[in-house]
Length: 170
Length: 329
Ligand SMILES: C[S@@+](CC[C@H](N)C(=O)[O-])C[C@H]1O[C@@H](n2cnc3c(N)ncnc32)[C@H](O)[C@@H]1O
Image (cartoon, rainbow over all chains, first blue to last red; front, side, top):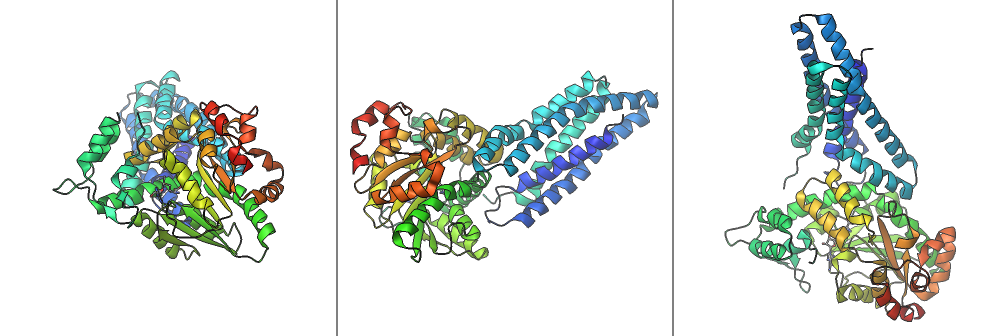
């Protein structure tokens, strides 16, 4: 199984959320749906560009490999191992977001305090767990390299969008 | 050691004239060091000051507006507006019942900051058309920014520069969010007394529930959501400074007022109750309010319920000594 498409989709969704986070807390208006969508699109476009880095890294690994078929197999295995912690994290986020949006305010506070706050802070740890997953799944150092580049790309979206468009004047 | 908030120290306003007073950076740094908070001292030491060591007032204003904008994000995510309306809607229903449906009422938010609550109420119309919405704050820069934001979105509300202890606006109901923990010692009771002495029918002040979880939750949430170290620092300090249920009820025990707590510690899930109000109502409003609240009125308790088998806080014994006196008034 080639997990590249699932990883790319997760990366792009994460980038859209990163765009939203980069903007959130910078605009005190009440009605800001359009600005939220705009920020998410900014995150998405920056993410799309940054995620080319792991794609190119994987391409370079395959080009330089002595046995491209084996290198491809290792990357695919590593990709699956990388995907498992990310998939679990995505499910947890989805669950707590659904709870936040669907439940009345008391229970939605629970979703925010228990879920979304810690889950936001845990993102670098989840990337680290995904890298470890790539190794455990037998992806070798090439998967670790591609995974680390992908993780760094994903984690850079929010600070970049923030600095580029929303950095405060103070 | 007292927990100090940086924002309280870097903006000082003369309570009488409302004029902004110069603040020397070194003095604030020294106070924070003496209070055993070197992290806060470092944050202040990094703020810009003039050659006379006086903090640059424009930079401080920009910083305060930025930090309050981030603070608003927390209010949005914790649905503070809905949380307030959950209590204010029945309260206004009770008031309309007594005062007549056609009356005009006025809600004044004290320490309104950037005025999120007032602007949100104006934008959603959650309290109905006959409630005028006003925000009051001691910080002129925040008031000006709140006003600018309201105008930018064409919202029907206004903001006034003024002091909580010398209120410039009469109200039917006074409210606040996240302000009570700034008032320490006798100032807390004075705050409630000023409102009880006015023509207001009720006050409803929301602040952080002083649970064991509050400082940890505040750390987690501010760390995840706020960028400026000042906001992160003050967010956790506020949770540490939150008043206990007993302190709030005791302070709200002032003549002419029935003091009540909504969702006190023992009755609520600390994960769900981040902010909850202490209420003071004219005694004749209690029955209509309980009726309007319906089943939720079980969340509303007076001092007598807190002492009688209620959750004992750390100063419950001290509270018991004074309990009942105010409740009977
Ligand atoms: C933690 S902020 C809360 C702001 C806003 N209510 C919110 O929930 O975002 C506390 C506010 O109380 C204001 N404040 C402090 N002392 C005050 C006083 N004596 N009179 C009026 N406002 C005061 C401060 O200027 C600040 O805006």
